[in-house]
Length: 330
Ligand code: NDP
Image (tube, rainbow, N blue to C red; front, side, top):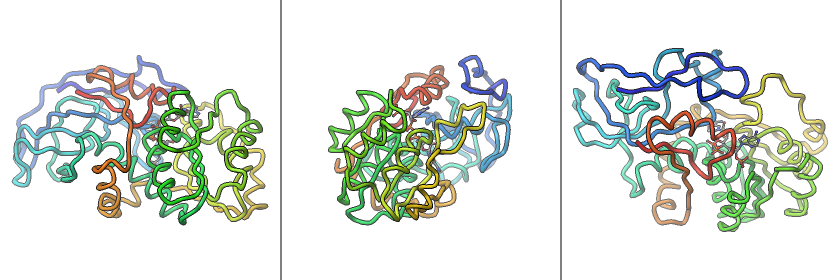
């Protein structure tokens, strides 16, 4: 098996040299284990937190050990009676070509008629996050005006479409012309945060939605949060899903200069971690799965080819190189 590990806990933006490709001879399968040929690997922003050497809501990666992450693949050998050779499965032993792990850590792919890698994106953890943040955390109501940052990414691109389907004005913030075009082609008003300070971004958002937002779906932090605080309506809700501007930061950042808006506008701001909500996953699949299968909900993918490119795919997330879900195809 070939796998990636990291040789240090990076400060600031990690470089490519942090990642080492190693090879190991896998032992024979123990009772209850399965061997899987991975076909798709997921890279996700939260993995940066696991490279910091400190426990947050999840343990840090262990230097020298294979990195972990969501993956889908095909069972090629099984000593677990519940799994057979040829089964398509999802598990967390990503960042490698061949995975070997206990069968109870492997789940067969749900039977919805979508390409298998959709279970890493729109129908996987990121999609589940968008649905939970909007419905359970922000408690979206029909007709709410919704603002989403990193709106063309894996989470954001589902959040904007779910919001759009329930009426109200939906505005997505994104970083490149290609991403803005993707949003607009799906009927979402798109605003760039590039080359705009918080004041200029506020003006652009006010122009897009003069009556103000009921909900801000937060993926980014920084100027996006500051502009959102300016443009939320009284009683607005913020679902704090991510703050990617902070993940590579070496110094703590000051809070938004207008945090008092939380008080003045009686806002509610709530963070959430999707693992706490996983019991709802079947419900999410039941609701969103058919919409993806019949094309009512669209999704984009940015694909890197080959195991060797996995670190590049991961690092590109922080440069905004992906439209939709960032994936590696093996
Ligand atoms: P994305 O597909 O959205 O990829 C990351 C995107 O973030 C980039 O494409 C880029 O888009 C944007 N970005 C990167 N760096 C910056 C920056 N410095 N300033 C502004 N934008 C930046 O990733 P995901 O959809 O997987 O994740 C989106 C967010 O959701 C992340 O913050 C992630 O941590 C969070 N998340 C939280 C979960 C939870 O349980 N709470 C679960 C899953 C994800 P652009 O070019 O538009 O700027």
